[in-house]
Length: 307
Image (tube, rainbow, N blue to C red):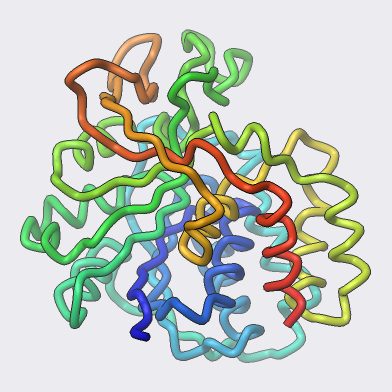
């Protein structure tokens, strides 16, 4: 059985590294590269941490690229500084030399190159804003035909967003951060014919990171991946933290765990609702992960990280 070709595009938050780790454990996936988008991170430590994770897991042949795109609404620095913390974790710094290559071209140019050279259409696994994808499409419209689908953690359809008013005055609370960072680019991707499968807050709100699960990771810390995952989640457990990017990424390993629902939508790019993914009749059709077998998902990630 042939593997599905995947290009990862993450934005350097704690759960982005964990989603990348999960993707690397999937026997049905051939990962062609990792693009780091400078949204929920600082780009240099985020790319460095990504390369060290690839080294740790034995995938130092997979290239990493730094995107140079910019968003409209920056993530809070308190979120972004986690990229420095992850890059300094002892488990990622046991060796002085990092072997995973950082390519010379920008992330957006690397995305164009990978898609054009791929032997068949590629799945884009995107756990940050869609800005690098939109920029690549603007630079090379022909790559649209080489994108099989986009699996994306983003949006909030029928629940409130997570851009809090005390962080962003003037917002109405409907926006999700990956859209809000650059709603114009999200709207650009909405203009394409590419199949989009979203993992929205509607689903992730029901799948929290629990102390019980983190404790279980600790009990299997003799596996380096579980050790690293447990350390990462220990950083965020005091917060209300959910399986955002990991839940979206697990879809590639076990789509049968999920139920999808089709919605007609539009991206709001201006005003108080900037960054909202709005359900509207006659809008752009997308699929959203609507339900998940939560216990099967929890068991799956524990299993995958025990290796």
